[in-house]
Image (tube, rainbow, N blue to C red; front, side):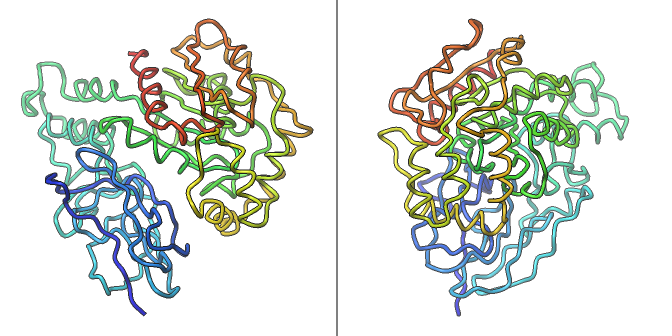
Length: 430
């Protein structure tokens, strides 16, 4: 039995001290093949896709999504045989040797000081914005408590640390305005983009778009109830989905946000705007649900009831336009994921509530018409899941983009254009 480390080295003449883990395409316990996409990382210049070097099983992830990893560190491990599966801890682990195996304990919920989130190279896990503000204020991140995912330091943590020190602005190299106010003002310009996926997907649906939004952009991609890591969370209506998202944002300390939603996530985003618990700054909708009654019920049923990769592949292809294809093995990976988290029954029940008899049982047009923030709708002209002509019902203030040759998933079929349009919406809210 041999272990094969997953790592990335400086390449192409690019100087790098660390990389940011954007998304894992597999989870511990998944079977992988040589050449499969295994993890996407962000360098100073671009997103880089790291492929599996060997056939085997992904048995360990050392750096979770959103964590920084030193260049050359072991991001995870592929084994020739199945063995103990371990998840990333809340702290960034030391890089391990190619043959090493170590048990990693589960993440703790309490925030940890950054000095406990270091690897052997003394790196600290913090968002680019938090680093910039801390550098401007002269704050040592080593003593800052991180409240983000896996203890990641965010701008609010830097502001809190500065307030706790109660030191004058001059001590931090800022203007005569109070240091805390200056930090909060800087942070207020970085309102997070919250991304909500469609039915049957999970937050990884945004993995191609996220690296294209910019290094200083704060993002939060959520798994909706019944999906991904939230598979055990109950919900049977758009309103319940919206309340759940609102609760999550409140728990994250997010009071203002730019919303991006695809399909079911688009309907959820519109419902969220009606709750009034989050100050929504802009809305970008990709083939959103709820703008008309029609939906391809056969696709929904095929998505939830297919039991083999070949059957599911036939239905997943319905999502795409004429020029797009699914990655090899994608349907098999989806089947494995659904079996692993056991959410096929939950999805089928949710579909029965929301999409019975080829009909969307909810109307989001009132919420859309009530918006008073920059609004953009992106739709593939070749959408075979929800008709693109629903976009014609959009109010006059909404910008509408119909993409030729694109089906139901613009974020997958045209990620560069989708990211550009999202950022245009966000910037128009400034």
